[in-house]
Image (tube, rainbow, N blue to C red):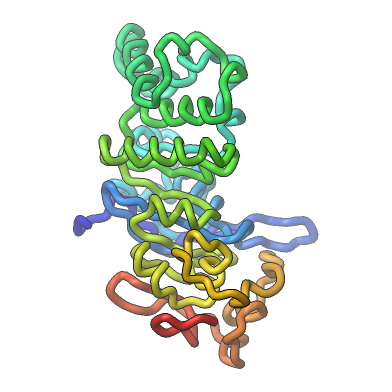
Amino acid sequence: MSETPLLHVAGLTKSFALAGGRTLRAVDGVSFDLAAGETLALVGESGSGKTTCARTIARLYRPDAGEIRFRGTDMASLPGHALRPLRRHMQMMFQDPFGSLNPRLTVGASIAEPLVIHRWKDKTARAARVAELMGLVGLPAADAARYPHEFSGGQRQRIAIARMLALEPELIVADEPLSALDVSIQSQILNLLQDLQARLGFASLFISHDLAVVDAIADRVAVMYLGRIVEIAPRERLFAAPRHPYTQSLIDAVPQAGRGKRTPGQPKIAGDAPDAAAPPSGCAFHPRCPRAQARCRQETPQLTGGNGHLFACHYPLGEGETP
């Protein structure tokens, strides 16, 4: 990794007001760095805060507190007009490839839209760029005149990828980009993303709940639970020797991600996640954790560790240990 990260996130917090005067803290003090060309996967159960974290980093939401330093500029408090020069270098890929495309625009017009907004060259050059991008994602240039409803889900996601790459971004924020696709198509899109990243060199913040996909694509993995990162490590190290019981439980729930090491009868995560608007005291995972002790109910653990492997647990797993 380079000494200066492409993206530096520190103490990021985002809350939402709920009915009855309650507050949901969806992202609670998240911090990490992302190097140029690297893929960091953000994983966790539904409701863990990973999508809100991604959208806040992309400044689709304004953070309550914290720092989002991208290409050396803190985006956290910038107004809209000041964000525009940075947005061309950071693009977002959404979960639903149909909902993210305007049904009234041809796919060529959709792909060209970022070029128009950022006043990239003239109309002729933009048309040539659209044809180039469609070829890059495996679609014929002649399809530019068609509309989104005329394409399959996988083809629409290819169109979304072409639009995402139009301005040659340095960072892609991909929010569950495979989950709305058929299983047979997911591997094609995953291979396409990996190939494009290798050729174009962009960094990726990849949001997913599928650890088998994460095992195939990520350089590092950050695990979220109720708005906080509870473990972050290089992918191989995290899958081989997780330190947080929640991480181990996620891996055990997906045999492919566990590389076939799962033992029959090994415990899974107990119960459901608590109400995120009223999280438990101390370690938020303690009501579901088989290792929880009195300290876990009273004291919130902080990220600790070394050699790039950090975890927030008072009683972490040892090498090769299970909960």
